[in-house]
Image 1: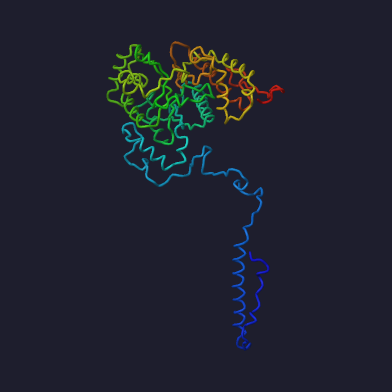
Image 2: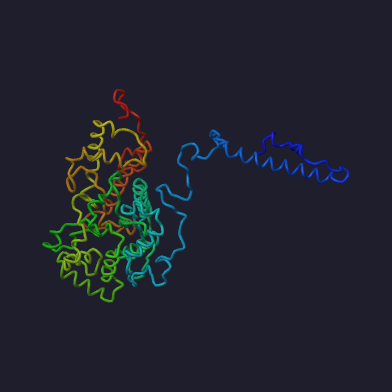
Length: 456
């Protein structure tokens, strides 16, 4: 904007020679205008040089950055990763030789994954702790009349846990390999998830009949830093008892690396996709005397690899036995009421644990709680919340179950476990199930902190 004092034309110089007005009137006008214009530019240039730029106070309509706030970038997720950037640099996704199928092994995966992360630097921060939880169920409706409802609630439970801890989750309900059904169906899904999520360090498989029953607990990943596979198991049962139940393959944490790709390739070679499938079933039964059924299964296959090739696998596999990485439901569900009361007793004496808080900061309260759980113990007989309750022997979809117990005990136990876990989530929303056996019951939680203690 030109200032008013510079908007008027300047008079001609007094030193100018007289001209014949009839002849010079038009050129004189141009000369006057030209001199005025040059003077205007000269003054304006000096004005802009010596005068600082205007500094206006921010208003409520200014962007967040001017108001001292962090700007909202819609291209980034809530975890600081750029979800809209996929550079044109070639990665393994551009390699026509790559395959998601089990039939075609993946080579040089560590280098391929590192190259992808180099081209997607926003995913590099925190990559070592990034987990994708993978689970699934059958492609068709359940035969059990309440099976689909139970599976929905089992899935909701996993979604709740992942939301609280910031994990991604993938639910698959298709057979990704036509021959790899039943308990073998997980392996093609896990391999596909590793390729689909190069940003994740870990893939966490959890069976459809397993649910989280400690919604605050977070895996101690630092403990597994030198291992590539984590399963619930016991070395003594593998190498001394030679039992096919010496570990449970229904829940496992596997590192997204070449070692794991090789393991999946070897592991799946004992499954139905192999021409030697029947032979592997015979070998497993001869090796593990407590295995009663003839088919080769994924759990026996993994135990067999650990037993026969200890030097190759044992140092890379962490057999977690210090807590319920997954726990047998029969020895767990009867203790939910006692566990609930013990945790409430802790909260009565610890105002900081009683404090209402946002769901997003639940992990902090889990850390607070640990100091009060030193005497709780772990595993069987403990009153600590089990991380995962696994309904081994109960099939919610088909309705089949181990003949050791009645089917109703399976379904009633599932409802109780689901409500026990759900209460831990609902508390952040101000409600709980008043009866663990009845999912329809709900009670509002009052804000009842003692006045002399305050929120802490």
